[in-house]
Length: 161
View (tube, rainbow, N blue to C red):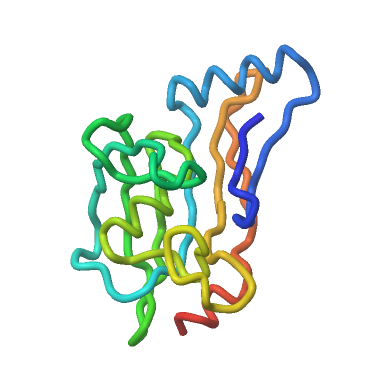
């Protein structure tokens, strides 16, 4: 139905029927699905809350990756700082658009890559990418608006505590 990067933990939804699949895909296309992620990033971001509005395109020099570039497609991410320590920040991320690697690219571009990111950061911390799909709010085919949640892995708070 939709996808997460392989190393991202958290909520993912699938459809059991073709009707449900079409219904859900339309919500994502119309940007009606609300997604909330939690990430641990390197350093401290300058503002406690902000919107990152920077277009993203495939990187021609490294086709497996993407980059911020004026010729890219519109990409918008809002963030809010939840917790900080001397080395890291725990952020709540809400993408408005759904570009490939959007959160990873945006955060790396502003100088705060996600901890453990082998493509856009140093990839040196532990054995995981510290990016978690915490909530997904959608309307089901029966018209009911629902929020699905996955608890935050304890290592996120432990790293920033």
